[in-house]
Length: 143
Image 1 (cartoon, helix red, strand yellow):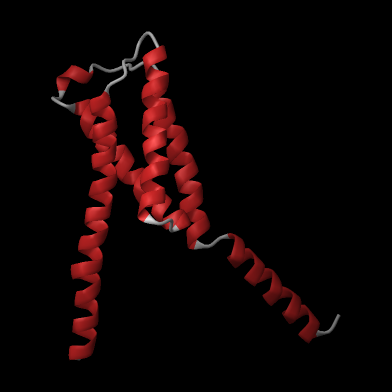
Image 2: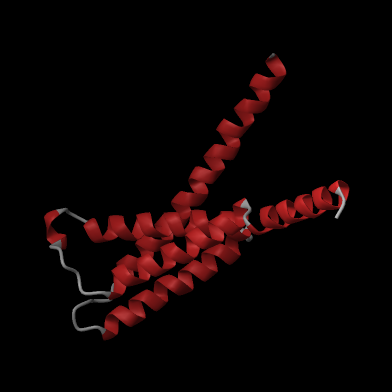
């Protein structure tokens, strides 16, 4: 094999590895892991006293769905309403399963908290695009 042929083969392999391990695939992997962890937490019997921190359950729902929205957005770049609908179905699914578990209870307030987490993600995304991203363009042009 010639040196050029070897170099060509190596660069092809490097680019194919890069194609597999890109930012979007990392977000997809993180989303899959997060879905497993969140599902485990919402379906398993709690080993902690949730009454120690007021509204701990709602804070957990908001935080979980904020993170799920973030990861879904960067993994798939869906339109906002597609992301909201898919995660709303997941939120409703969680509550339906919890209603069947003797050690859990279903709550419409939890679904509302989940939707607040999604809205909070889109609000922070809007803030980022509006102020932080825009300020980079202003700073770069001022130089």
